[in-house]
Amino acid sequence: MHRGVLRAGLAGALALAPATVRADATYEMTLRTSDTLVGGTVELEERIIVGVKGERLRQEATGSRSVVTRRGARYERPGRSLILDQLDHGRRFEINPDAATYIEETFANTRRRREAELVAAEKALGIDPAEAPPALPVSVDRTGERLRVQGRECERVVLKSTREVVVVAGRGAPQAQAAPSRFAMTFDLCFARDVPAVAEAQALEERIGDAAGRRGPTLDRELRIFARRRDVFAVFELMHRLLEREQQRLGGVVLRWNRVFVGPRGGEPQAALVREQGEVTRIESGPLDPSAFELPPGVHPRHAPPNREEP
Image (cartoon, rainbow, N blue to C red; front, side, top):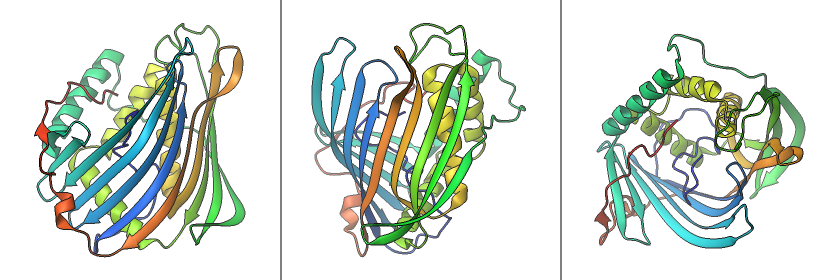
């Protein structure tokens, strides 16, 4: 799970039917995340603004990151982040406005790098590429509740799933466990059906994901890897992505959400390991400044660290 101020992919927050990008659009959301997967507690508060203009997607975030270590030390750090996806040029800019630096990567290079990471992980774990991807039973409760979020009506739907795993030592568990541990994940969502401005943004994000090799068969391969690893972080990723798939099958735009991942921690058999709360706070259609979708003046390139997104 990304721990930067800006999350590069927002498909998990907003699931909706395919659409064609036709007009400039903007939407804004707030996110609050509490994460105790790897020891200590990390809390993020983010304000994210997404803009679409033609074949270009702009994602800007401001927020703060608060960390409490295992020994009780605490520190806080504000931050800003900006991502520009230019589908017309086949590239992405990841920009740090505070440091005035950026990383540029083509979608073709992203595909090649991701393929190499997947092949290496499959070889290390002995995964047969022909085996079926893992699945989980997911309960879908259409509660019948109708709520209003920012003046728009939405339907409350709750998705739940559980998984029992003999956890190996790794991220989230310093020691291997002898008996299976029970994990549960809940998505409490409020769906709206007619939000074309957000649908246009999501349609472009899906096309960018296709160009960068982040969708389709790649997702099935990632699921096999997470299912085989069995550390707590991998259990979280597996369950989160499978529930996202179920969310996407429901269609519509999620205007408000509360996602919780529960499992053993310390002496507690069922503690909240990850909690994410979010809400779409503004949706607009109208002309946007083309310069906002270009690399800002005064920023300088920096080299990308190797293996930035290992499965």
